[in-house]
Image 1 (cartoon, rainbow, N blue to C red):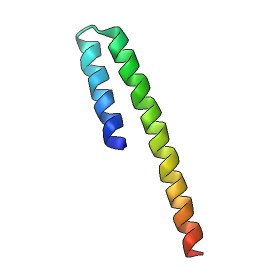
Image 2 (cartoon, one colour; image 1 turned 180 degrees about the vertical axis):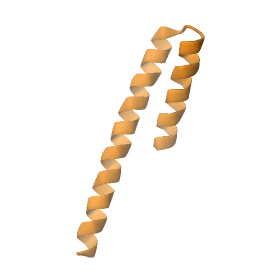
Image 3 (spheres, helix red, strand yellow; image 1 turned 60 degrees about the vertical axis):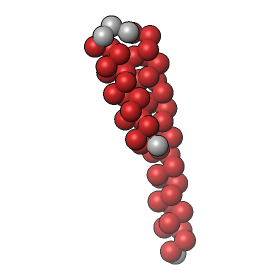
Length: 54
């Protein structure tokens, strides 16, 4: 999931360089959503691992 977020971020940067503002904005938004989902899943996984060992 983090790989997809980085991919969309790179697409956003390249689109912004070439002047495609709409595509850059959409790609940046998708990258942000994917990154937040990754962070939430990561934290949930850490909590579950701590609770499982206790």
